[in-house]
Structure formats: C-alpha cells, structure tokens
Amino acid sequence: MKLVVLLPAYNEEELISETILNIPRKIIGINKVEVLVVDDGSSDKTIEMAMNAGADKIISHNKNMGVGAAFMTGIRNAISMDADILVTLDADGQFPPEQISNFIVPILNNQFDIVSGARFTKEIPKDYPRTKLMGNKIFSKMVSWVTNQKFHDTQTGFRAYSRNAILNISIISEFNFAQEVLIDLVFKGFRVGEVPVNVLFDKNRKSRIVRNIFSYSFKAISTIGKSILYHRPMMAYGLFGGLLCGMGILAKLLTISGIFGFSDAFENGLIIIGIVSFMMGIFANIVFKRQAFTEKDFRLHLHEIGKTKELAETK
Image (tube, rainbow, N blue to C red; front, top):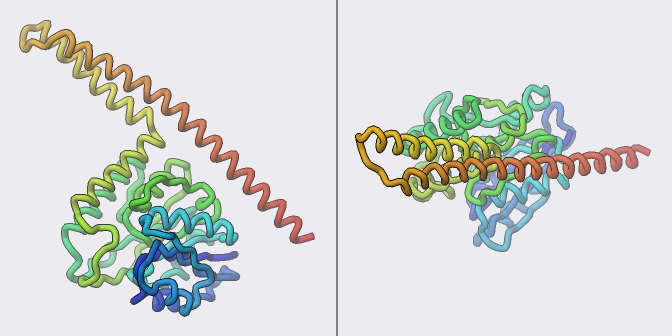
C-alpha cells in the first residue's frame, strides 16, 4: 500500500517545512509514504523550503490558479504516482500531520472510500471568527441537504481518498474543491465518512480562500448550484420549471376568479418558459448521463491498463 500526502501550497514558505517534516513516514498498513506538493504560483520560497524539507515530488503552476485547480493537479499526479490512498493536507500546518496515521484507518479497513476531517466537534479554537463558524455550519447543512447525508464540516482541507475514489473525481471549480468533491463522490455512490480532527488556529493568519465573506458565500453557493445542475439536472430544471408553470396557472386562476387581473401574455409566458425549462432538464440529463458513462468507461480502461502493467511486472 502506498500513501501519497498532497499539499496544495501558495506562498507558504514560513510553515510548509514544518508541515512536511511532521508527516509520518512509517504507518502500520502502509509500505511507502510520499509527499506531493503542488505549488500554485507562489512568489516566495515555497518550492525551495519544500525541497529542503524532503518533498518527494513538486509540481508548479506558472501562475496562481486557485486551490481547486491545485487539487486537480494533485489528483492527476497522485494517480501517476500509483497512490493507493491520497491524503490532502493544508500546507500551513492547520491540521497536525501526526493525525494521518489514525485518520486513514477507516479506508485501510474498507469502511469508507473517503474520510473527511470534521473540525469543531471536539472544541472550537479560541478566537475563531464566529462569522466563519456560522458560515461553515450553514454550508455544511446545505451540502447535507443536497446529498441527503449529514456532514458536520464540508469546508475542511483534511481528507483521505481511496484509489478508486481519486480515479472517479471530476470537479470544475478552480475556486474551492471542498464542497464540490463531496457532492460529486456522494452522487457517484461512494461511501463518505467523517472523523473528528484537531485543528490549530492562528488569528493573525489570513485565509487564502475566505478573503471576503460575501464573495466567498456567493462563490460557494454558485459551486453547490453547479454541482446540482451537473449531477441532478432534472431536479434543478424540473423544480424551476414546475415553479414557473405553477405561477402561470395560479395567475390564470386569479384572473378568471376576478381577484387580480394578469395579461394573457404574462400567464402564457410563465407556463411556456416552465415547460421549456423542464425540457432543458430532460436534455441536460441525457447529456450528463452520457458524459458520466464515457468517464466511467475511460476509468475502467485505465484500470485495465494498470492491471495489465501489474501482471507484466510480476512476470
């Protein structure tokens, strides 16, 4: 079993060395541990510090592309490194790396395909902003509602993935992968579980993602919305279409009863747009299902190639 620890990093020269050095290299059930750093266009000495600390592989973006893009670069490279388990970890040391040994146990025991670190279940760090904590709870409830599975923390960067899970990840957000990857994998039928984790908080350190609470909220809601459109287009377009048709029918009833008068163009327009929306949902569902089948066939092909390679190596 091979474990790859992925650290997306952007201008983390102060803490990345300590984080890498604290990653356990000997874990029961794991034969080899390698550290993969994805430098997201840093302008400081992040790469130099990572090399000196013993990172096994470093990939650099020419410019800052966002943590979501860095995550997907890490996924592709982890697959090429033949990772059996991938752990994503913040490069700033927010999560003590010593937790990795126990964190991956549910995957080693085949209990889950993905393990997500749940912060704030044990205790809330002193001076942690209440607005961020409230936002975390709101978005966690939103993702829980969308996926029909209860999550306590959907914004965490501390997660573990089985090889089968990383072969099936497909996200489009360059902003933040946290919510989207959970929705993506739950909708694909993977077993996702949460494990309470310890977190260190430095009130003087500015977040790389939450620079503005309103901007972050808009982008997060947009990401969740896109995920629903991608995985459940009939639900999204159908609900919207049904709402418009219902409004159009209600407007007609109010007009006929004389309670309130609406024009025929307004009433019929709502109903027509609602029907069009429903038809778009059917079309989108066909397109996305076809794409899902294509992705599945491609991954099965890659899996067969890997098996053939393993057989060739044993001979």
